[in-house]
Amino acid sequence: MNKYLIPLSLLASFTCHAKLDLTIPKENCFKAVEIVKNKDEQLFKQLFTPVDHIPNADKEITKLVDSTHNKYYVKEYDGIRNFRLVESKLVNYSEDTKYSVVEETYERWGYTEQAFIYYKFDAYDKRLKEQRTVYNKCRFGLKDGKWYMVNLLQD
Image 1: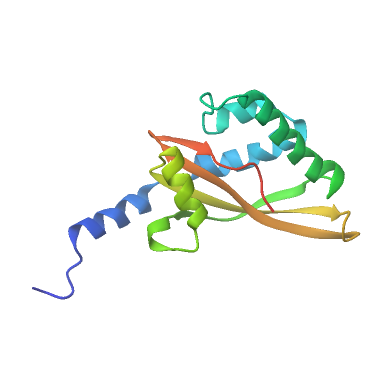
Image 2: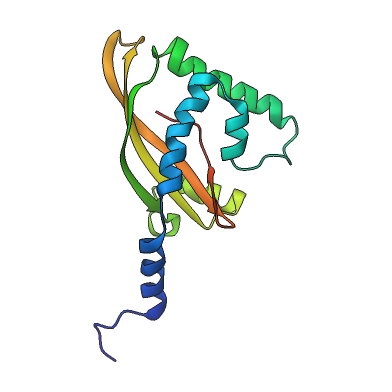
């Protein structure tokens, strides 16, 4: 057997990852800012993983959207300015153990792929009393051919 041959299954997984388009998760990361800025629960419901099976889901959505809005526009920061994407990547939790939260999300919601869309924005940090650039990521999971939002802006 030739030691330079790549197993077909491994090659196929590289090929699938290379062809997976992250345009929608990138666009939806920008929409996450609109959700937070405008407290747009309807847009949130369109993009987020369906939660119809969770009791009091509407109340929990309101709580999440309000608390995230307050964090970025009232309590910790003075708003989100100059929002931009930095990097995007597919995450495979089985290959990288530092993503244990990704593994939990995979199992809980049944995603076949998960994308991290890294972003940054400018804001005045009320806690530090200084202008700064905030970095983090939007997370999306692919299920049945559709990308779903997994988180609502983190930092």
